[in-house]
Length: 186
Image 1: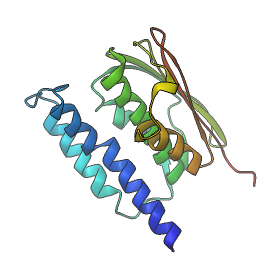
Image 2 (image 1 turned 90 degrees about the vertical axis):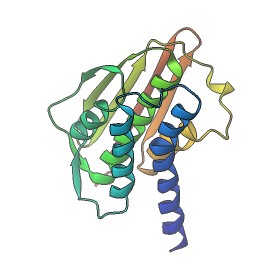
Image 3 (image 1 turned 90 degrees about the horizontal axis):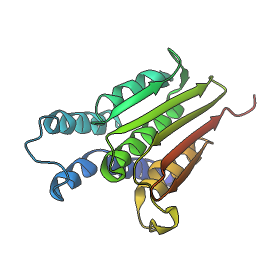
Image 4 (image 1 turned 45 degrees about the vertical axis):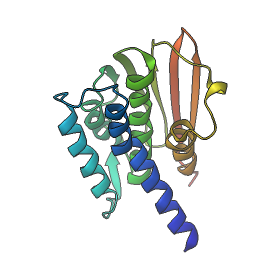
């Protein structure tokens, strides 16, 4: 029971980090003007997302549909390459979509570019999702362990569904985030 409560608290913390807290931080540090026309709809989506996290989840979800919904809100030009549909267990699809959204949010906040590419390949047993930008890049070792984004919103989230998140970046070279997942053997 205690582990279930900790897992729920961790996911609430991740959802807050990935939605409302990020939106507020961007306004608070002046990265986004408070009168930006996309800000009010984004805040509404953030609140809707936080409300939906407390409801009963369906058994399955279409990962492509979840990714497309997030692409509409990231304020980037995204080249999207994916199959028409990819149905997965809901918890897997939601975790992968959330990790992808966090990656795209990081592009918007840190990469110094307004463009990214998202490529999804695979099937309901094994998949790979790449999120790439040609922004300014960074040195992964310089990111403090106390930062939640890479540690929890990407790696932790993927680990909890049996997947991996690999980040390859170098200053001046852009960033590639690769999310991989393989279904457990039957």
